[in-house]
Image (tube, rainbow, N blue to C red; front, side, top):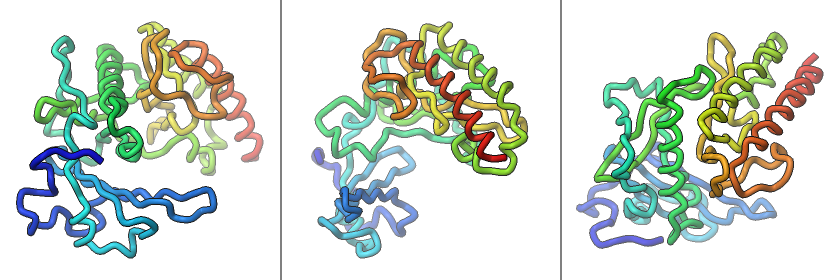
Amino acid sequence: MTSSPGNDAGNDKNTPLIKSLQDLTIIEAMDSEGKLKSTTFYHVTEEEEVYYGQTPKNKNKRETTIAEYNAALQRVPDEDIYPRVPEDIQLTIAPETLDASTVYVKRPGLQWYDDMIGTDFLPKTVLDETVVMEKISQSPHPNIIQYYGCRVKRGYITSIVLERLDQTLHDYVSTPEFQDLDTDKFCRSMRSAVEYLHSLGLAHNDINPYNIMLKKESREPVLIDFDSCQPVGERLQSLGTEGWYEKQFFTSEKDHDVYALKKLGEWLGEQNTGAK
């Protein structure tokens, strides 16, 4: 992991950065035999400063003390994970007054930080999704996740702020309420969202039941997760979800969405049959 001078965990090493495990996001990676391979963790401050660390090999989170977590945490340089605010794009800054319980703050995928050190993968992913959400939000679609804007700290885009929804389609099909879902209407709403994206010259490239959520009252679908959404023809950093694309791809294309929508209709039919 890279670090820069002055990036230790706090100016005063005697002051704990974290006080409990609730202050951390902890990621335990397993090997092919189900044995612990590594434990990494990170903490994000109110100023969106990121501190990252890992435990000694094969030591799990329950064996690690709070003091050991604090000692291992190191400040991640902003430029490793955040993109600079572009000069040629007008950004929407998310209001500070938003109710935290109603929004989802999406930050860089820090679970990949170790693998992506030395690349621009994480900053580019944040910037690409921000630019796409800015474009989509110019004329919001009811079946696309609402974008409230981004957060900027120290000249970097540190996160995007989105509408919070609680249930994915993948989870919803396991509930008794799924039997009452009007799947034809559901699919029409999804097609409408995708056609809107395509009208903007964009393709989502990762439509699957994990990237579709449901509105609480209406049970209308909401398309989420736009970090693979790019202008048609652009090269992608990440591919779609296995099982939800016809063949491996590396560029953004409308055909990927068309195939996924067709498969979605078939999948919903199978789930409906199984639920009866």
